[in-house]
Length: 111
Image (cartoon, rainbow, N blue to C red):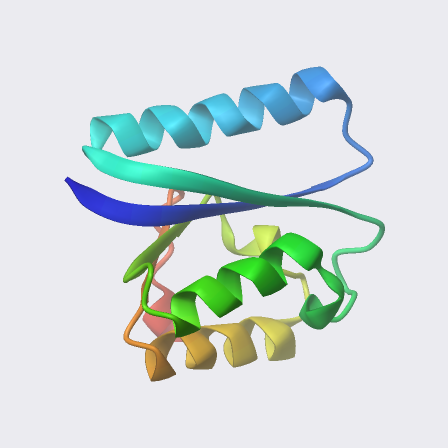
């Protein structure tokens, strides 16, 4: 069983919507036979700098400490709508030998 981190961010969503998304992510991980840990932030703006997110920063620290070699996200907007921030985060993952898997199937090597 592969150990992975799951990251999600929520902007102005009610608890039922948050619960639904977390359940989707959990089901994905169960289907893939992953041992998973959730990290999620409630945010005000998807264009904000990624460094302002507490749980994402905790995840980055854990990745740097080699606790995970893969993270799972629902889609790229869970990180940011700012391509620059997404590219920087993907570079951080590459520098730390950590893969990223999108539930929507997006090939992030395009970034």
